[in-house]
Image (tube, rainbow, N blue to C red; front, side):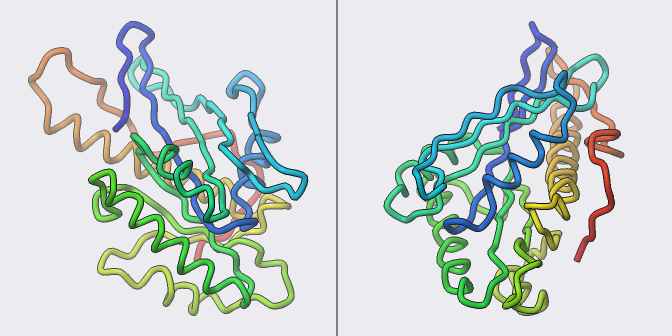
Length: 227
């Protein structure tokens, strides 16, 4: 759940990028980190092997939006894609507020995408959580590769639940779709926070009521495409 620090006047949200190995989770964070104003970001921490596979997590404290004097901080994490690090995935998912599921668009990665999505649901269930109650979006990455599956097929595999969510095509190496994805999940988190604030109205101390029209106004540069 989001953390409200009244002493520092800060609201903190945790976003986890989930998906199979080498699907582009780390590339998303690296691109975001490279484009965000240095005053609005912390150090990007990456632990990887020689094969460039994340072993633990990337952590990017990203400041954006001031809500009635409260600064919002978005902490971005990735999980390791390899199955042998499933315990680390569970650890990173603790206290998650929102999820970006990054799928690899290449045909030969469809099985891995489905397995990773199922693994996400299983790991959430182990912590008493469900995708039915957590804001999340889908990103179909690597659309620049020659052997990609059609978007409608990815939608069929990953977005066929009763609750359909926003999905975005992306080429994380060039930044296409990266900020559109981040904006979408941040907006969902702020909207959920607004609803929860209304439900707790009258309690003391009272959290600030956020405006949710634009989560990262002025941060993203370039045009991205939404499915």
